[in-house]
Length: 359
Ligand SMILES: Cc1ncc(COP(=O)(O)O)c(C=O)c1O
Image (cartoon, rainbow, N blue to C red; front, top):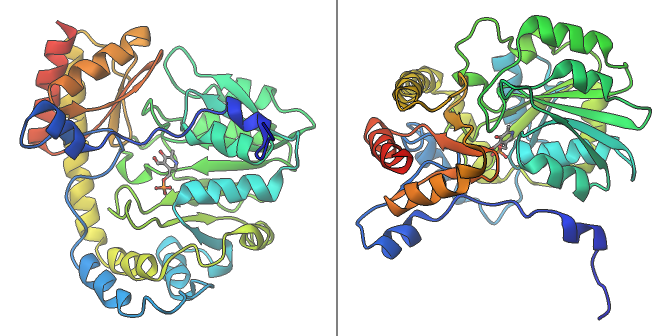
């Protein structure tokens, strides 16, 4: 058969979306299933967001502002950086793709820890770059020393996921300081801080505040998690102006939609409520961690809105057992299972399912 697409993509795993709750509920014959598989926050949109989105949709026949001026200005004010250093995108995952496109030519290398965010291998391969995976430490975190040592003359980009998805672990200031001192100045380091708002450990630096002014550092943030806009797709990055300009050249035009821009502006008015919701998630995260540890499961200390059960090759069976009890979690066979923190009731349902699954 004539080949119409790139042969190298055959070997690439597809991104696995979380399972559909309605499908599972139908399959099990129950009223509602619970989805704790996509690291979403369970409280619904922030106040004012639905109204702002509804108002914006009246202009849906118009293109959005391609320069995303109002939102970039607002983010600039909030994060204390000039707007020319900010690039928005269709979720931070799209920005990670744009970063690969803006830095790598075929055969160039992207270094990341593994296991980490499952989109990284797809982003690297999609851009024709070579993935260099550095195994996680025994404690399930990034080995920044090994990551720095893996840099070659082909390395263009290093992705540091802090806190790390899916293990919840985080790297601390002294480690990052040492790492950044070792990485050559012509290699771009991306601090992917999708879960920054859930960090409670003072030793884990805010990448933007601590390293944002370094020429070769880019900080990636999302409004999908703490800000509750996963379905509208808004991410942003902060880079030096020249880097931001280069990335803007490869961004898909108009990819921060009209509705997304309006909703993000409304969400940014609700920072107090965001903090309140994050505090609820954090309290539940600590409760779920304790409860799992009482079941003799190893649970690395999480700084995100999910916990990691390093169950090894028992991961898929554990995931299936939870699903059979109406709780969808994310199994990464053969490494472990990631469970998003939901409402207290959802977390209780998960803990009951986990107890039965582990028995
Ligand atoms: C580490 C990390 N980075 C980026 C993203 C992408 O988020 P979004 O594209 O929704 O902004 C995710 C989402 O799960 C993530 O876990």
